[in-house]
Image 1 (cartoon, rainbow over the protein chains, first blue to last red):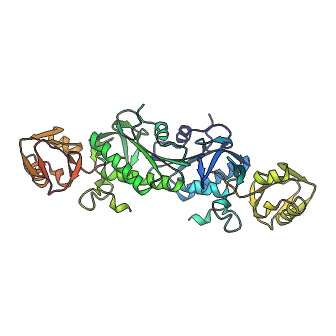
Image 2: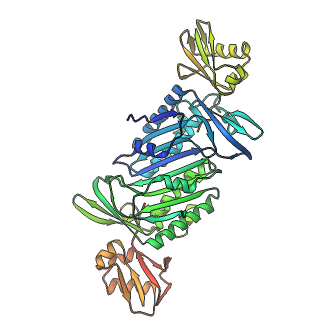
Image 3: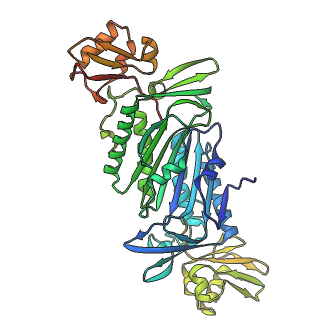
Length: 158
Length: 158
Length: 77
Length: 77
């Protein structure tokens, strides 16, 4: 079985395979982040979600995030899988697994990964509410590209 | 099946059941921490480990950590399982799962939990090396009880 | 020929997931202008442009054979 | 009677996982002294004492029927 560390997939995902990808004898700590479809956002009830990706570039950007992480935290191993397509409430959209000999880098690198995914990975979600639907840009939750463009190199995060 | 959120167990543990314990429709983020037996610590090769617990008090202390967390981060749900007995390299010793509507509290509460476990939960490990064995006190890695006693109330962490 | 991929709201606005432009060479900035004026795709303004799967700045050039993607603000995770 | 539970290195030093003291009442501080002097358990000095599964300070009292645990520096996680 090939061990693809950075993946966009269309089927349901579970945490076990990602843990296996980063597990090793040198590891003492593994952190995982599991992003699920939340029912209520900003007071609105979500019925379901649709994720769309520019798949080849999205996988490339996930890999770039992995490279940024191993440069910043050389002791870590990282694996990321993002699901696309229709998802229901509580379905898993993304899993990030990081292993490290000690716990601190495993937490820091994991949180860095999710922040960067929300900045540079070409994936979009369309929310279906009771009374409508819309493609969500991060501008609804944050400032869109505060520097006029995505922080491509991750320089803000040193 | 009863859903015991804070447990000391003697058999191998996996992350799936802990995720299930904290999963809910309001959650958008679940973090897990998986503590595994690391082969090399401070340059010494560990062969295996033995964990011993004062079980009833350890479960009570895990529950206290859970209470501290839901007071500090009211949006979170927490579950912790610690294994005791003989463990080999890469075996899982502890799993912490935290769910939250948004990701930041899920990371913060999770890291808080492992820090507190290392301070107040009556569990001890005995390391078996190639050339000997010893019960490890945190004093070998850290200052033992810097205030002369464990920080029972977690007041340092506000 | 330059292929332009569209996603999310832009895809719905254009009614297609790709445009094929019969152009030999133009800058990213010129492409933005064309998409806004000829195709009335206003969200291009707040989008990034990727050329052959790499984010590109306005002054960079696109040539026949390149694959361009218009990337509206992302919302994965 | 007061039951005193021992763990980890203390258990190995004492050669048992519990001591039963035929005492009606004593303070945590007095218990520490007794364990160090009578039983020569030097690690008691750097250990915490829990009375009925709650960490106790030196000035607190232990009574017949209580379960006491000596908690050397912990190393779980």
